[in-house]
Amino acid sequence: MRQNRDGGSIVNIASTRAIMSEPNSEAYAATKGGIVALTHALAASLSKDKIRVNCISPGWIETGDYSQLRPIDHEQHLARRVGKPEDIARACLYLTDKENNFVTGINLIVDGGMTRKMIYVE
Image (cartoon, rainbow, N blue to C red; front, side):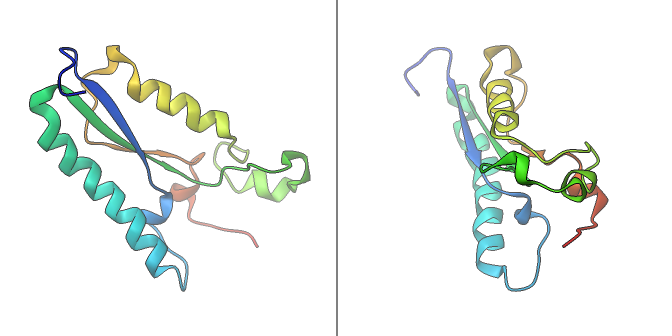
């Protein structure tokens, strides 16, 4: 990628657990926080080669049977639904698009607004 005259793009995947926690999640939170920190450090180091480095922190992304989710599962998100894998895929496409070459070193939270609401229903 360093030899590519147009540079390139790296997208790391962390988690919203990098910025919020539940009991007994220290190791997981630390690793996800490390990915966020690594992202902005790499963005600084690789900028001279026109390599953009960003991170996506997904929230609740249902990869199983979406139809099995309860209404309350959806309602606790500001977006009024649980996330789907394609939500993360679209974020990756945004961050890797050459037209978005002014976006680097960020942690893009893709969670339907759940971290802003800060209320979880069991």
